[in-house]
Image (cartoon, rainbow, N blue to C red):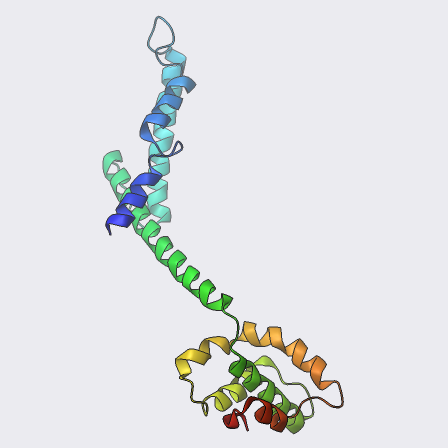
Amino acid sequence: MNELNDAYAAMFRRDSFSVSRVAEKINEEFEIGCSNELISPQNLALLVAELASERMSSRTALVTMNQRPVDDPHEAREQIDKLCFERFTQLLKISSRTKESNTARAKPIPDYVEFALYVAHIRLLERDGKNPGWRKLQKRASDILGRSSQKRDEWIKFVTKSRIEKLLPTFREITQKPNYPSPEYVVWVTEFNWLA
């Protein structure tokens, strides 16, 4: 949790989120302390209008986040900050899960899984007389892999729609040739008897 707090706090030290940097920009924008008078009446009126607009934005932000808008600007800022921190935490969790998922997807398909998919493809092609889709291939390959000595957790992550769809064009190209390798040949070459 401390890492999250540190990361969230670091965000507010950047220029666009830093209170002191934003205050400097407001001073420049409204020419505060640039002449004999601290601020001109026109710029003071603009500054008040800007502050009113920001308070309205805070109340609107609470509504868009499914919260009751509050009149007290301090309380509104606290609520928005709390909600932003919760969202920030969620995004970091989603980001770490995405990273894990991408890492898993980056691993190449093990040979034994690819052989099972190929054998499943041949069996379905010979049975139905047409190339199978990814869903039928997934089911048939899962049945074949279930007979292997490998644990399900080790191969199930490779029998996905995206992985299968990448292999389908190769399988279809191979099976267009009259002498494509038969399932029996694949079993003989690999010595994976469970493929049969």
